[in-house]
Length: 244
Ligand code: NAP
Image (spheres, rainbow, N blue to C red):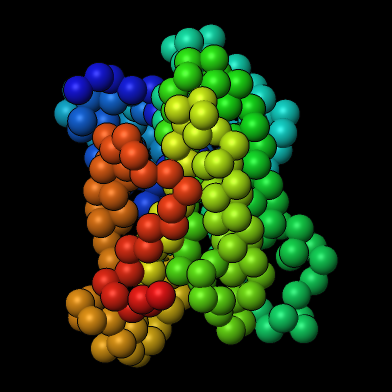
C-alpha cells in the first residue's frame, strides 16, 4: 500500500483523533490539525510516536482563511502533495430555531461549513495537478433527516452534503473522489452533556442496540481511502437508527 499524505481537520479529540491513529497505523503520514486543545494534540502525537507512527500537528482555526492558507502552504512545502483531505472539524449547537442568534448562526456555519469550503478550496489545486485525490466531509444523520432543536447544526451538515455531491461531479474528471460520512450518535465529547436516559433511549431505537464508537467511523474512512469507484455519496454509519 502506498504511503499517503493525509490532512485531518479537528483531530485533537473525538472522531478525528481516532481517524488519525487508525490511518497512521496503516503507515500513512498524518497532518493532524487542531485549534484549542493543544494538550490533547500533543498526547496524540506522543501516542503515535510510541508506536513508531508519524503524526505532524498543525494548529489552525479552520474557519479562518489566512490560517488555512498557511497550513496548506506548510504541508505542500514539506510533503509536496496532499492525497487525502478529511474535513472533520465541527461543533454542535442546540437551540430552538426562534432563539438562534446571528452570532450563533455565523459561528456554527463558519466552523462546520465555511471551514470545509476554505480548506477544500486551498487544497484542490494540488490534487488537480496530481490528477488524484480523496476528500471526505464529516457530516451527520441530522443533515439527512433534520433535527428538532438542532436545526442550525442540521442546516450546516445538509449544506456540506450538497457540497459533497456537487464537488464529486466537478472533480470526478480530475480523478478526485468526494464523499460524506454521516455518523449517528458517536461516543465523544460532543455528546458529553447528553443524559444516560437519552443515550439508553437511542440504544433502544437503534436496530443494532448500541451507540457508535469513533473506530466505526475510522474504519469507513480507511475503506473510502482505499476505494476507487465511490464518489458523491453520503454514507451514514448509525447502527440502523436512521434508515432512508
Ligand atoms: P469533538 O469530540 O467535540 O471534537 C471536535 C474536534 O473539532 C476537536 O478536535 C476540535 O479541536 C475541532 N475543532 C472545532 N472547531 C475547530 C476549528 N475552528 N478549527 C480547527 N479544529 C476545530 O467532536 P466529534 O464528535 O469528534 O465530531 C467530529 C465531527 O463529527 C464533527 O464535524 C461533528 O459534527 C461530526 N459528528 C459527530 C457525531 C457524534 O455523535 N459525535 C455525530 C455526527 C457527526 P480543538 O478542541 O483543538 O479546538
